[in-house]
Amino acid sequence: MCGGTLETLKALKRLQEHCKVVIFVTNTTSESRSALLEKVQSLGLSVSEDCIFSSLSAAADLVRTRKRRPFLLLKDAAKEEFPDLIQTEKIPLDSPLPTEGDRLDTVVVGLAPQYFSEEFQTAALRILLKEDAQLIAVHKGRTYQAKDGLHIGPGALVSGLEFSTGKKAEVVGKPSRAFFDAAILRAEAVMKQRFGDSDEREGGGPESSLAVDRKRVVMIGDDARDDVKGAIAAGLNGLLVRTGKYREGEEKRAGLLNENGQPLTGFLGTAENFSAAVDCLLLGHT
View (cartoon, one colour):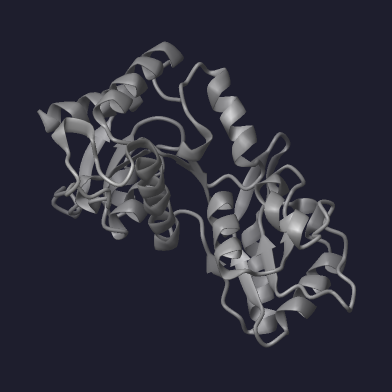
């Protein structure tokens, strides 16, 4: 979190009091929602599990909606995001190599280096050569940072499978529009659960719609391309913070500012940290 834990907690509380719903979005592929929730709550943040939405959640929702049988090239902790599929479809947690008789029809790739071997790549290839098979990439990162430095990311495996099978991967993480579309659907579901079929806040009656107006949604993030520009491309607004991944000049490099320094439509600017971003938003609403 940005700008110090206590400052962030206060800012988040202000934001939650003002907004109908606050959704936390992330591109992580190594942990399930429940694991992320535990981390967030350990910081003292008041957040429910349904308000955490990751690229892993998006992949699981996609597989579930399409009623696919996936071969999960994911870390064991990440597979916890697929509990119903594992139970009903008898998909083992330890992701062994599929047998010839398996009815798997989809390959889901995340950050799981232990499954980047030729053996598992070949198994994924053979599934994808089926006529109706689908390739889903939780994200397509080129590298990832480990304690000993940079390592090759899941994007290399995804690109290799695309090249060998002729099938295009469906990338569900940020900055894809599909990710932000799914996050909006999650926000609508949370609002319906909280307020019923109509919005009872601020005098809302039965005629009040819980459909999210994208022009009133703001993505706050430290990644100019994946967070902010991705959100803007999906019809949302974006607010950048100078913490975490941010580096000076990211606004221009990501195309959020033109040569004259004018902001891209939907880009609300850059704040020093999360607390400052919340101040900016709330002042803008008054």
